[in-house]
Amino acid sequence: MIKENIRYADGCVFEGMTSISAVINSKHSDRKIKRVLYDGQRAEKLGKALSYLKHRADEQGFEIIETTAEVIEKITVGNSHGGIIAECTDRRIPRIAASDIEDDGFYVYIEGIEDPYNFGYAVRSLYAAGVSGIILPERNWLSAAGVVCRSSAGASELCALYTAGGDLCGLFKNAGYRVICADTENAVSIYDFDCRKPLLLAVGGEKRGISRAFLDQADGIIKIDYGRDFPAALSAASAASVLGFEIMRQNR
Image (cartoon, rainbow, N blue to C red; front, side):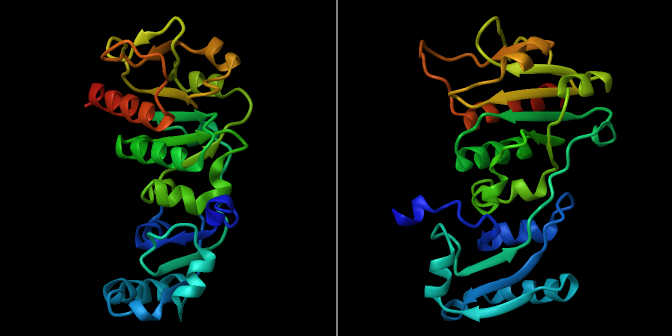
């Protein structure tokens, strides 16, 4: 329980080979590994991973240090690290500009998600659905980057991420994009809406949703149909999965 209370304390510790590999192989992040720590008692099981990391360490200039399970336990949040972690630098998340926007892309603005795990799950689904980039408010969960990376299965490091600034709707509309929001009031079913690219989708958390100012500028408001009467909102991660893959389907 203590670990749960301090789970956001150090956002630059990345746990397990999935997260570490994502940092190494990202084409969108300037984050660097400073050092990799591994449990010496698991060295044999980690043989293949350590061989790979030693090769990449020469290229990228990080240390690989043998340590104990107790040391790793003090640093980590979860217990799925497999005995190997990486201490990394911060990542710069640039403010999105017109030059960052692809001609025929699919971008998602995520607003109001109140938990880094839920945020990570949403990023995982959207990345798998082929999103061109994810845009975040200035205050976001990248301060807990290690948790987000683990919950997104590395997608948060592999995906292009930006922060929003100024008139985000206007920026995308000037680039020839339609802007749509996921909401319930005056909404059209996602299955009846034309979701062809280029498209910017805004998804909000289940408690706060999308801001009124953003909704007022949208070209369309879409919703997810349920199979029965049910008053509760889906989690942002579940909604992102449904919406992302329906948009992918319409753009096959």
